[in-house]
Amino acid sequence: MKDISQLLALLGDEKDFLLNHICETISKDQIHLPNPSHIDTVFLETNRNGQTIRSLTQLYQQGRLSNTGYLSILPVDQGIEHTAGSSFAPNPIYFDPENIVKLAIEAGCNAVASTMGGLAMLARKYAHKIPFVVKINHNELMTYPNKYDQILFTSVRDAWNMGAIAVGATIYFGSAESNRQIIEIAKAFEEAHHLGMATILWCYCRNNAFVKDGIDYNTAADITGQANYLGVSIQADIIKQKLPTNNGGFTAIQFAKTNPNMYTKLASEHPIDLCRYQVMNCYSGRIGMINSGGESKGETDLAEAIKTAIINKRAGGAGMIMGRKAFQRPFSEGVNLIHAVQEIYLAKEITLA
Image (cartoon, rainbow, N blue to C red; front, side):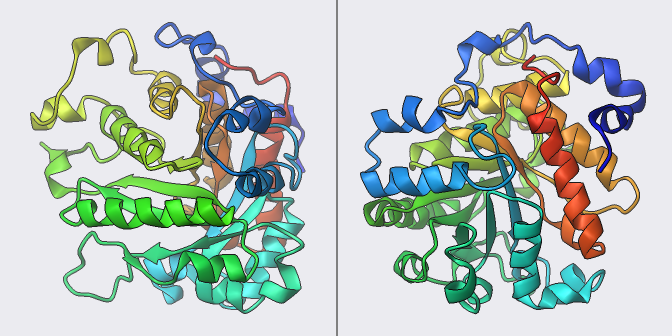
């Protein structure tokens, strides 16, 4: 394990740019920041029942980031979403779902998020050892041509029955099927809360019309921020979102309603400011936003993961949910990479911008 100075050195020329930035758009005193008492200060005021509060507490009190207010989750649903062969060919041990669970435990994650089938194979052996998050819907990537649709693979009750503490789901906001997905997942989250489970939303945007003049605005701060707002509106307890890559998506495609302050007073071009706008759309940080780790690119994975973690933490985000960068390499290297990201959230010298 590299010490924190070695990890920060991976930022290269961007070190000062990322570590010394101060948000002059949305100040940190305008958001609810992750902290050890997050459950007490935020969720005890909500409509979540006692069982759901307990499930959220289990999630936040597991692993190396226990009682920090931050989360480190291992997500492995790519076997369905991206095909199993493509996902696990770099390290075939992960065709066996037990190795996925073992990786999450060894790396000290707060939870493992995976498919119903994979986690069901191991529920009696591991559900009491690490929180299970069952992903209840998927884009199966077998229908040709591919379409941006998420379909249910299991029920909330089945996930509850095997001991999972949370369900996860994806909505492709902006897609042709998004209205149905919103209705389905809103009902699923209502049932999950009734049963005492936490809810995590993969809050993604998918629409070819969001690409304009060769620029992909599916990950624009304004568009993803609105997706976040819709996600918390259906009572997601945690939002999973991609880091914004640009801004001004709504104005570029000349769609929806905007206000000039969105692009001047509430955001700048700095990645931390763009990420903070995403956090602001999660009820000012009352609902924690975790950023995804993205695809594995090989040797640059560690540096990219550290950069993402720093942007997320300094923006007021609640952690990272990183899969491919960890499991598409040797087991021990995956553990070390997850540990390195966790060190960013444990490091007191990395403060809110």
